[in-house]
Image 1 (tube, helix red, strand yellow):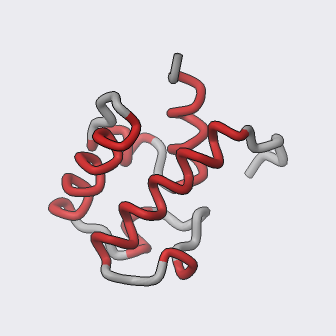
Image 2 (spheres, helix red, strand yellow):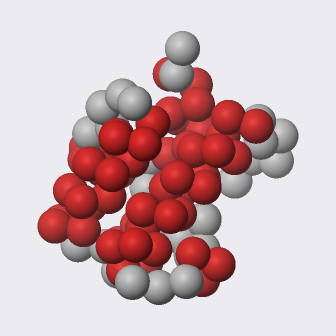
Length: 86
């Protein structure tokens, strides 16, 4: 993992991701390890689809399920999404 400074936008996206994952898994958001792989958190295909839809709605732009496989943790996906957000 890089020690790069996390931007405010990344933090906002991380919060949206954590909230959506916690909702899907029915767990406390504070229990979500942001550096763990989505599959290690317990997300299956149906969960990824649900989380992707919720995150897309909250962020106001499409976040495809394939992005969860290319950027495999909350930290990585938030960094990716922050970099592509206008």
